Length: 497
Ligand code: AHR
Image 1 (cartoon, protein in one colour):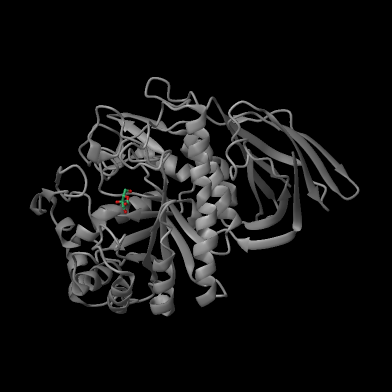
Image 2 (tube, rainbow, N blue to C red; image 1 turned 180 degrees about the vertical axis):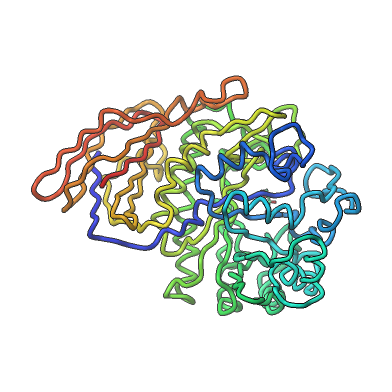
């Protein structure tokens, strides 16, 4: 397998936010996930689990989306401020019918972002909230002035306004966010965003709800209508795509027990996001040829049947090396579309769907998907590089390449290449050429295991990143020749200077 990277072809900036996460009031993502409360025996700072915060800092988590998801369009932010003992208790009608005590609200979310050092992405309520409610939330969070909402924030203990960059105007408004037609939502979007003001120095990046897609329903009409009617009033347009192994949402398949065929089919289905980005992107290009509007893939990842014995409304699933490959392939695709994809948020951060962290009481583990985010973190804020790779599809799964890759150069001139080998049983010899630069190897790391290997609470490090040996680097007069082996089912990162 031959891969050529050309450092002279410096392409688009890779927005760090492409490596973002999503956290919803769903199952054990927030409660019994990141948030254990100030009085927990689990080590925490202001209620946030310290071990998870450290893990998120390690991958340089750039942005976190909250509070939903479907939950966002039923969330009334005033329920989640003020003295906790006075906060409303209500039923989370979307997810599991459990009691939501609102002990994690705006102040707690902003505190989490502060501890992690990431940008806040707040998703507002269009489906069941009023324009006034949304306007006041933005004012509450960001106004430095004398104003009713800023004064209320001060009364609740936060003198300084927070910085809130990303603001979503509704979620899946074609479905759980109100079952709207695109024409109707476009008008609603225009109206609501008008009152999301920029207070003081805060500048909002307004995100309109985009298409929810599936292999059978790519929903291009939604993007067309939104761009036509409201493109001039948005900074970003979202896109959701979940990978399921089958085409049947009633029987998606197990997260951990699957055949080789199901493994390949899942990765093939995941690769479909490339076509979705191209085709939705082509529609956006007609209205926004300079690609100023970001495609915000604010929900993506694998969705399987829940772990047997768990609440079906909690969407708890284990995570294997199959998911690591899915993440590696997807993140390489996002990098290669860096000109249009300006943010992405895997669903979801903790204990829900393709989580990067799982918890069980005080125990915590990092999933194989977490380790992919670790391998890929050097791409954040770098520039995509031109590259070419030989085609070698998985037989019988046309459209799924065995090897996926992306390459970037950072501001210090270091080159970062990420690779994955999806083949379940074939090690692949890679002959990599870096054109026109004599480089030396800084670091080579690998995540590998059998396709359904995972970390468990009994063996939390069964799958973890190791140094990759056997990388030979030979500079010559016109570049550098590198050779290495990509083991079956592996994700690799290489850095050169
Ligand atoms: O991530 C779970 C759900 O999937 C979200 O709440 C919703 O936006 C999507 O349908």
